[in-house]
Picture 1 (cartoon, rainbow, N blue to C red):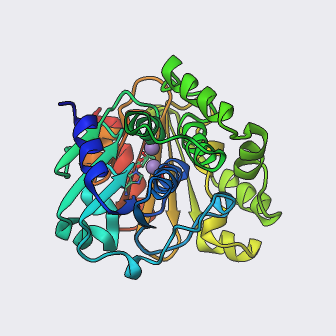
Picture 2 (cartoon, rainbow, N blue to C red):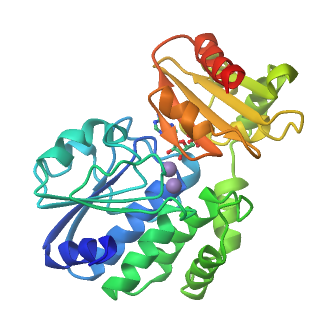
Length: 318
Ligand code: AMP
Ligand code: MN
Ligand code: MN
């Protein structure tokens, strides 16, 4: 039996399914969780979907069908079956770690190469460009049909984790999956506009602040910048309204590696990207985070400057 078959068997047997994804969910995490949740509900299961505090859906994902979402404290404490999506290690479940430990059965569906498999059944495929692709495979195996809403959720995962079908993880199979989503009613123009072209006006001044303080360090092929609370306060927007800042930093062609540190009051959050050869997943893992070879991140207990220094040192050693 393959891992996917083992996951499908547990899912088929369950009456209720508690579904989650990593904290600070992105389009792939939330899209996969909600898409699977809608399909499970249609199959007659009792479904709850949640993710850890801060329980805030990013602005650009609020167009998704969110009806199944509940606050994390309403999530089953001891689920019979818990299925988690796009979560590279258990700690990324935040406050739902304890629920995952208390779950009778835990299924992990993920594509992070750094995932060591913390479930009873682990469907982990580092070659899959998105968890949404694995979710699609799972629905096909279960024989659960795509609706327009399910397809929209999964399409969001496929689009966002491949940078709109641009990164090296864009495979023929992933494009076939996207084709199936569009066939089932997902609308690329709606998804594209909601996710990428629908920011509050204040976002423009945040881009200006973040790109304005970017630093290029040619000796390390490295470009980095900071996003600070003051940028958001001046713009009058919430952290949930500013995804994607790293994308303005990483486009500098002089740099192989790009880093954006978000210093917004809590522990600093570090996003890393590389173009061709630096394994930022390894750097993030060594700092207690994780991710992929070309896109990774970690949370850092010290200052933003110290986080940048950690990355610089890793590049200098590398
Ligand atoms: P981001 O820079 O937030 O878009 O994340 C890029 C990749 O790194 C994603 O695959 C994330 O799952 C992973 N990642 C980001 N932050 C963390 C973290 N604190 N711990 C583990 N993985 C992370
Ligand atoms: Mn993710
Ligand atoms: Mn993903």
